Amino acid sequence: MSSDNTSGPAIELLEAVRRGLAATELPLALPGADDARRDIRNALAQLEDYILPRYRSLDAPLLAVVGGSTGAGKSTLVNGLVGHAVTRAGAIRPTTRQPILLHHPADGRWFEDQRVLPSLSRIRGTLNPAPLPASQAGPTPDAATVSSLVLLADTAVPQGIALLDAPDVDSISADNRKLAGQLLAAADLWVFVTTANRYADAVPWRLLLDAASRDIMVAVVLDRVPAAAEAEVSADLQSMLSREGLGGARLFVVPEAELDGMGMLPAAAVEPLRRWLQEIAADAAGRAGIARRTLNGTVKALADRVEAAAQAAEDQEHAADVLAGDARDAYRDAAAKVLEATRDGALLRGEVLARWQDFVGTGEFFRAMEQNIGRFRDRAAAFFRGEPAPAVRVETAIETGLQAVIIDEAANAGDDADGRWRSDPAGRQLLGSDDLSGTSDGFAEMAAAEIRAWQGSLMELIRTEGQGKRTQARWLSFGINGLGAALMIVVFSMTAGLTGLEVGVAGGTAIAGQRLLEAVFGEDAVRRLAKTAREDLHARCQVLLRDEQQRFLDRLDLSGGIDPAVLAGQAAALRRLAASA
Image (tube, rainbow, N blue to C red; front, side, top):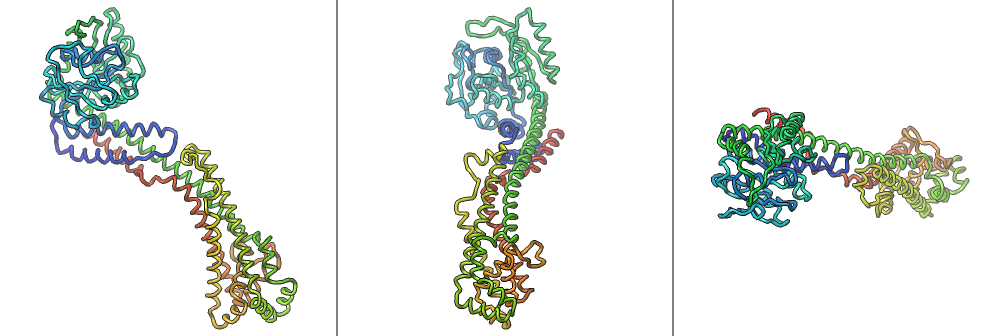
């Protein structure tokens, strides 16, 4: 197989897929998220180890990975294929702790660099000039070198194909199992070794089914088969392969036989498999067909994985939206309750009411207002000029009361949002041991500062409204603080709809402030001032509560991930690529 102009766009697509998968973040603890993360890691590894290297080097020799169950005789089989001991075989498990890649000397350049299996470092091995028993052949690696690949050049390996002796797929070592899966995923074809009494084991069959999904060429070696059971066992295994979509797999039977003094099988036992591999190596067009078939099948399987990653990312976004909605709903409800508390007269009770009544006086204030607005203005003006402190006390009482309402509703919202998140596994994971119920540190001070800022803006409204020549003398005579206190009282007695000013729970107390303002600015201006002040207060409360909810939303930042629609588009492009070959 030779490179052609079509490999360029294919590689560009595959590189984009690699970037997309690498950018896929699945931080939320959703059902299936662990499996999705593992599948993404496996897809990335296969891109690096096999798909991209094969597209970049379509002329490279085939890589035949020899894998199978513990004790199936893989290393002994490989030794038999080359005619002398090159890999370690023995009773101690795991035997194959380090993968050994056997290749013809002329093919060395294809494997010495990091073209294939780039995550494994290379160790150049040498063949012993004198034969060694299989138990002494090959390197004896320690655990620290399990991530390396031993390269052995041997003229007994036909040019055009390389053999890779992999660890056991069901090894007691988790690292070995992981490495075996990685090597099998990088294969152009599999030589899968099992035994007469273990061919139905679950672990090997999971891998064989994966091979079927990738349409990879598989040779199944049934090892150590007693002569009396050969026909029965072979027929049963062939039937199982057919049922699972692997009817095209070649089946080789290695009869039970004694090993010689060097631990070698009789040459005749492995001759059919050796001849089959030699025929593949000698047929350039056939090798190209095998590589193309495996590559296309692997790309098709990759498309399924990318599509699954897109769905997982979409599920994450949906779950994040639900959690964000829970937090926003809690604080939106809090903002609505604060707004309601500022317009239903509730704030005109207690300390605020007492300070306002101190400010406007007793029954004489109302009788003066009813008898003659001019006389009321004169009396109020003298009162404001002589004793400004009561107005300030009204402001302070309003600040304290309003602050208490805001803090209480913000704390309720924090409790609600924290509770909703803890009832959801994803939210529980995001919170961890942190308690976000109640309010954040410093919230009370921020609320007080915002209320004072609102009161300041309200005073500025009055000052601006009173700039006209006809009203300036009036508002100056009443005092800015007095008018401001009156406007706050009016704001807290307004009903929803802003169609008029009504008396709240404080009865005539609220209407006194209204009449005072109307005497200075006129009825329309009072309505406009109250509406503006209320909207300003509502906006400030919303900002305060949005800032509070942000401590929840900050934990939901998925902005670093990739758009699931991009992944879905890449999956479709991969299917077109696989179908075009």
